[in-house]
Image 1 (cartoon, rainbow, N blue to C red):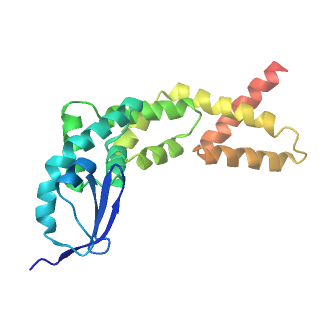
Image 2: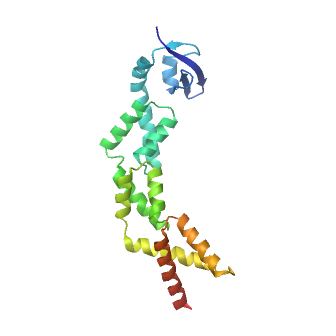
Image 3: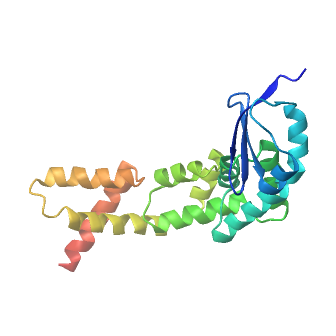
Length: 213
């Protein structure tokens, strides 16, 4: 006797979301596949058998969806997996899609991490913030740290100084110089710069501004 039960069905023009065992799993079934095999609330099913039936049907749809995402911009495997699961594709489907894309070199987490870290550095973000953003994208800790280590130190330092110059001008009207500096360092900390790194950048920025005067 099957213990798995369909507990909810939500249909749309694109297909259906089938909830099994009160939320244990929610499966996306496209319209084409829904016409082939429909379910109703209360139906008893064999979940393992359903997975086997659905996997080869979900895979080409999920692969096309992932490729369409990559056509918009580069993404990490973690991002792609999250997007696939948000659409209620099965874990096994997501695994197959990621494997295919990695094999065909459509995705490369190491290259993505290096490129994204450099992009964030150019946006005047410090290493701590870049590390956090890479981890948020699903990049493993060691790979993220390697990407940060590969950053151009001179460009990173120049970015910090440029940010410090901008913030010095922003807080120049602050009457209390001590509070102004606290706000400036806090602003740099929010962007991922460590205290020593921020202080050095501020000193360099102040010196350059004095020379311009």
